[in-house]
Image (cartoon, rainbow, N blue to C red; front, top):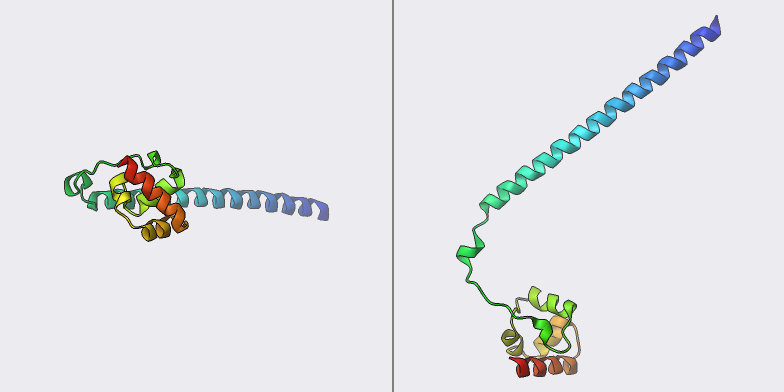
Length: 120
């Protein structure tokens, strides 16, 4: 008789654990969905608050800085991050400024400026 109660207990424990796991997973997945929806709502609200850039900022033509010999994708990215979008802007910088922006030596920076001046 004792074995019957033991097996019933183990079956009940197993069913209870499965129900608890199913409830935990359902709660976890719905909480993630709600969090994602809240994030999307905040993103939409932030986009509504931002001014239209096309109306506030003048359109500036940008050059392909990689036309300058010695400037590849990495240097192009660093210059654009610093606000240098044209070869003329690059040529107007000093050797020290270019060396600091691109983290290179002054000789190499001088070579880049010479190339930029020839193109621009």
